[in-house]
Length: 111
Image (cartoon, rainbow, N blue to C red; front, side):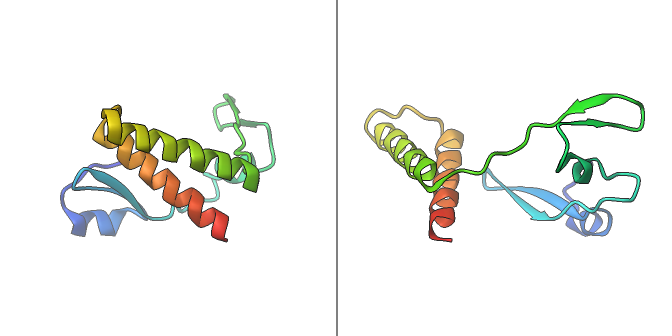
């Protein structure tokens, strides 16, 4: 991982970038795995992965949400955002995170 303000340098050495701009974080690119660095690929089917040093790494698999779960999550987020407008209960970062999650869930519902 590197931290840099020089985009030209970052473009040359990084396949994936996390860019902080105006207080919001966005991701560009994808991680490229070498043959020796395929723990993520192994983890797709296993509950536990062993790295090159013999350390056991537990894998937390992401569970896919049903449409019913998505609708409930959307309602919960909309309620929290509505409460925030009335009582100012969230920080700006929490509000942005909830707005991003809401947009993501709504996009998944349409797909």
